[in-house]
Length: 429
Figure 1: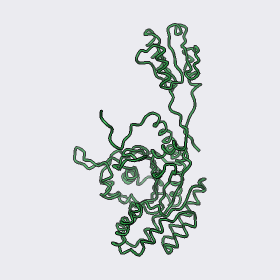
Figure 2 (figure 1 turned 45 degrees about the horizontal axis):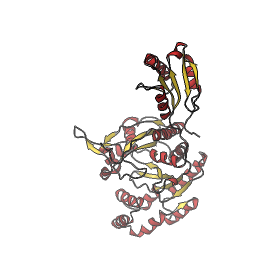
Figure 3 (figure 1 turned 180 degrees about the vertical axis):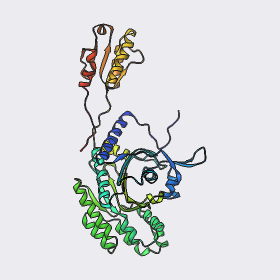
Figure 4 (figure 1 turned 90 degrees about the vertical axis):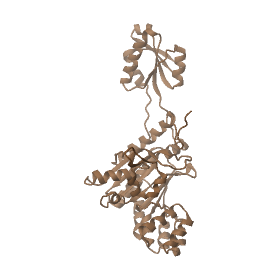
C-alpha cells in the first residue's frame, strides 16, 4: 500500500460538494463586485518570493530545480503571481484592476486541524484604486463572500500597520523584524530586535498597544498611547468602518491594534476575519494594503487585497450547520437482458444530452441487484429498459424514494425526469 503524502487529503464526493458550494459563493460574490478571475501558474520562479518575503521564506515552500536547473516553487499563495502578471502585462490597463483567483496552493508547514500542506485559497486584489474606497471595498467583499457561503458567526478585526511604521524610527529592514516578532507574539525576539535598534524604551508601549481592541474608543486610546503618531492611519480606520456601514456591514467589526500582518510589504490598513466556532485556529481571512509592484519591477501603485482559506470556510460552514445537499444522480438506467443493452445505452446518452445526470449498468447485474445499486449510489429514479415495454415505445420508471413504478414513453422520459429535478443553488444575498 502506498500512503498519501503527509499534509494532504483524499477529498470525497461529500466534502467536494460542500467545497464547490463555498467556491460557487465566492465566485458569484467576487463577480458581483466587478472582480474578474485570473489564474497564475501553479509553479513560479523562486526569485519572485525571495523579492516578496526574503530568502527565509524558502523553508516554508516546496522549492525545487527543474531539469534545466531553474529554481522554481509551487505557488504558496496567489498575490505574488497576480502582481507579477500586472507588472509584466497590465501596467497600462485602465485602473483600478480588480481580480480574484481560486485554487490549490502549497506550503511546507506542520499539518494540523484545518491546515494542510496542499490547501485551497480564494484571493482578491484591487490594484490602482483610491485608498479609502479600495480598502473598504475589499473588506466588504471578504465579509460578504464568507456570508454568502453561509458562515454567519464571524468577527472582522481591523488595524493599521502604517501608524506602527511611523512610530518605529528605524530602517525598513529593522522595522520588518520588529513587526514580525510582534505579529508572532515572540516577546523574547521583540526585546532582542528593539535592543539592537536602540528602542527598548518603547517595548512596554508596543506590548500594551497590541492588547487594545474595541470601538472608536480603542482608536483614541491607541492614539494617546503613541503620542499622536500615526493619526492619519487612525482616521483612515474610522472612515473605513463608516464606509462598511454603507455596504450593510455594521455588526462584528472591531478595531484591533494587535492585527500586525508582520510581512514587510504591508503598508497601511490590515485586517483579519475570525470564525470563533473553529476553536484556537479560527482565522479564516487575512489581508490589507501593500506595496509589491515596485519589488517586481513596476512603479509604485496602491494595492489592497485579501486571501481566504477555502478549507477553513468549508469547515466553518459544516460547524454552523449550513445545509449543502450531496450531489444526486437523476437516474440509473437498468437494461433487462442483453437484447436491449444497446437501446439502453442510446436512452442514457439522449438523457445526458438534455443535461440530466445519468448512470447505467456496466456489469450486467440482474434487476434486483441493480435496484440495490441504484439506491446505494443515491439515484432519484431507476429507468428499467425491457423488451416488452420497448415494443410499445416505453420504459418502466421507478421512484427510488417512494418505491412507486409506472410506465413512461421514451420520448417523454427526459421531460418527466427534468420536471422532478430538485433545484439547488448556493445561498446568495
